[in-house]
Every structure is written in structure tokens, then in C-alpha cells.
Length: 425
Image (cartoon, rainbow, N blue to C red; front, side):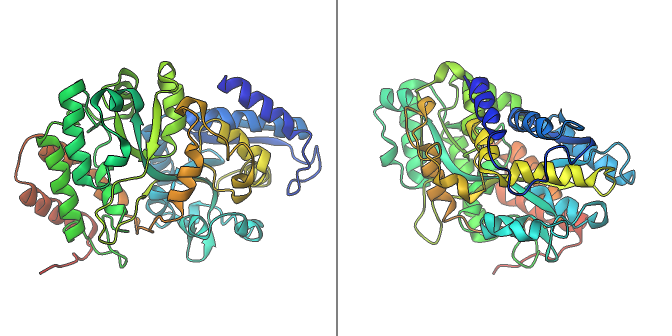
């Protein structure tokens, strides 16, 4: 069904007036673009339509594993561009880690004309794809976070999503669900992802607005204590890390209330097809002291490499993919939340999702996106993510001294980055 939808919508592109793209046949040569899992099918579908408009052009979409893509990108940048594609998909929380360190390796797409198209997207999305007032990324997706839950399991336990208003409620009713069904709320396979969501509800993260290490702010400490409590109360599944483990837990019904970005919708459809109709979403729990019922959890843009031999072709295909409503509907039908504002007015966006019992998942995500708070990731995001993932696996399930380990993480990150530490009394 998903493949049919992609093919059907992609075919309509040829009948659509492509306002920002040059006349048919104007481009030639080859452009290679890297992306991972769920993003690949829509890219290929739109590339097929683009190549029919431009018979001399070849858009090569290369599927790479999420972690493998970043490893190869890092290696290629160190090697001055050797082995890199013309463009790659990049998550917004990784943006600073690459663009600020290697600004001369990426193309300022604003100068290529994209600055004139910036108003097609939410302002915060353009900001997340910019550095020193230059636009380096063509916006693609965003990931407002919600709770994805299994309807049948909640019903079996006698729990209603509306009862879960705070994170303490999440623990309280999670214990009831575990006692009555044997199911866990979510797992440790995503490392410190739950921490980033909980801190992000306040606009907090690894670093403060000035770039100082901010792991011991009161919001952060409380989030870690809540996560440890979830593990101690038995609602957090102790599992191995990694995407494959995560999707297996979802498909087998091991975890049934998952805090995640809306992009998880498409992954569930593809990875757990037998669960159709048994899913729903509800807003993140809030504490009511300045937090909001959503948080940044993912989001992507396409960046172009300076070493690209065919920048014009690459840019115009990506413009075609990211700024045309019909192109973005292809991605939307594949389960990806668009940033192109025009898509929000389409009937497809405003319809119920059959896989989710006809709930209007996308409208719920759009509501959540309106309240999201900005987080300062900095170019040292990777090091903090690595350190906090170690803390998660090393303390949350072992009953270790959380505060002591958090102090160690702060010192390790300070030694690695040379950044100052935000001090609290």
C-alpha cells in the first residue's frame, strides 16, 4: 500500500507546474545523495519524476545506515571531501557538529537562491539550518515529540491516555500496565533520547544558550532522577542499544508507550505492519512549571558538499524535492512530517491515519510543533550525546550513584571540549 501511494503521488508530479525548477531537459550529469531508511523511498520516487523532466540527469539515491552515514561523512570531511556524495541528509541536532567545524566544506545554498524561498518554512527551521546568517541546509523534516501508544494494551490495563498528564502519572499508570499486561512503557534502546525529550520540554539540553556545559541544571537533574525511577519501578525495558533493537521491541509489543518524534509513525507502519489500527498518540506529559507538551526530537535538512561536481543539478533537485507541495506529499505519505508550510493546508495532511485508528496524527503533531522550544546543540553535541548515552547505560539500570556519574560526565565533557560549566548553587 505504501509503495502504491508513493508511485501514485509521484506520477502526479509530472502533471504539476514546477515553479522553481528550470525547463525540462535543462540539467544533465549525475548527482549522488545519501540518506537513511524511511527517507530513501520518497527520495527515489521524486527523483524518478525529476529525471523524466530532465532526461539527461541522473539522481542517485544511496541508502546508508544512520550511524554509518555519519561515520563516512566524518571520515570524508577529514579526507578533504574524498568519497563524499554531492549531498547528504543531516539531522538538525548534528548540524552544528559538522557545519561549524567544516564550514568551508559545505555549500551556502542561500547564495544559490534558497534565501528567497526561506519564507516557505517555519522561521525556527531555517535558523536550525543556518550558520552565521548563511543558509547551509534545505529544510526537510521536523520531529515534534509525542507519546505513541498501543490502544489494545492500554484498554486491557484499564488505562486511558487522558489520565497521563504528568511524568509522575506516566510512572504510576506504567506500573499498572506492567502489572496487568507484562508490557513495558518504553526501553533503553534509544540511549539518552528520553532525557533529551524531557529536558527539551523546557528548552534545555546538553549546553546552555551561551554554549556552557549545562548537565547539572535543576531540570536536567530532575529528568535523570525520573528516568532512574522509571527503571527502578520496572516500566523501562532493559535492552541493548540500537535502532534494530528499538524496532523489534515495537513490532513484538514489548514496549507500548513510546516518547518519540512524529517521524516514528512511518517507521511503525513499515516495521510493525501487523499492528495496524492498534496505535494512537497523545501529548507529552508536563510538570506544569514552564515546560510544554512537546519537544524537539529529530528533524532533518539536506546539505550540499563543496566537492560536488554538479552543484546546479543537485541544488535544483533538492529544491524540487523540498519546496514543491506534490514532492513533499510523497514524503508525507511515507510517514515523514514535512516542514513545507503549504503541505499543512492539503486534504491529505488533514485526514485521519488508518494505521492509527483514523486519528489525525499529523494535526496533533502540528499542534505540538507550535509550542516547541529551541535548544542550543553546539558543534560539540556529539561528545555530549556519547557521554550521556554512557551514563544512561551505566547507571539507569545498575542502580549506581546518579549524581556522582553526572559529575563525571561533566568533567569528561569539559576536558574533551574545553567549554565552561554552568554553575548552580
